[in-house]
Length: 109
Image (tube, rainbow, N blue to C red; front, side, top):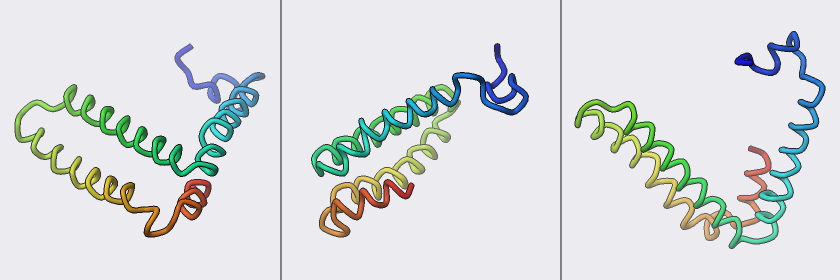
């Protein structure tokens, strides 16, 4: 069905929805958060992968929607306004706030 799960069941989760969401939550905790907490190397790899994935998603969306060179120039400006500070932060976060503090911020997020 094309309806979201919460709409099909009158605003409540379906019988297995809580199990699915709990499973995803545990996978994220075990597969991402705990290894990121333990290893600054793994943390750097994950963060850079998310930036790369976000960049790819952004440019795929731009490619599918932009119609002229003016729009591409605008999107390049917006991309650089996001990407350059993000890459600078990824490069220097260990010296500025340290690995432990960064992971604490990720947990809060």
